[in-house]
Length: 128
Image 1 (tube, one colour):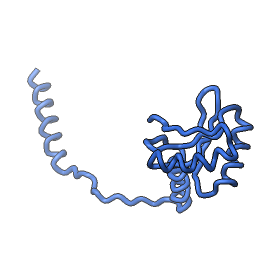
Image 2: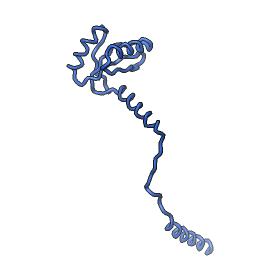
Image 3: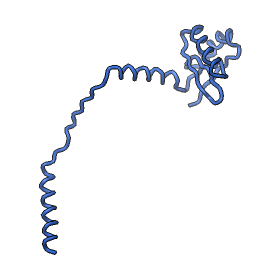
Image 4: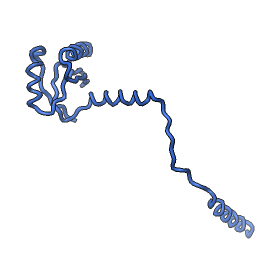
């Protein structure tokens, strides 16, 4: 019985002294990454910025199937080069949104021009 307790005490003492010589890791971190990773990250940021739904006004030019949405989106990109656009999916329809207007007045001015080509265009303010 005494031998077991002496062994336990010896083990505790050994553990105590051995932990005094253990050192933590340095806080220096070196990151090496492929330069293409930064390009990919920038592309991802650009895509995310174009599909984010925020408090700004947009103009919806189409709602329907995927093929017609792509066709309408390409037409909008060619016709209105200065406006950003995106295709958004809300089941079961694909919607084409163009513009990113801060004020309703700005959006309505552009809506007049867009309605000349897309009669069904409407002003929307997407919710988050």
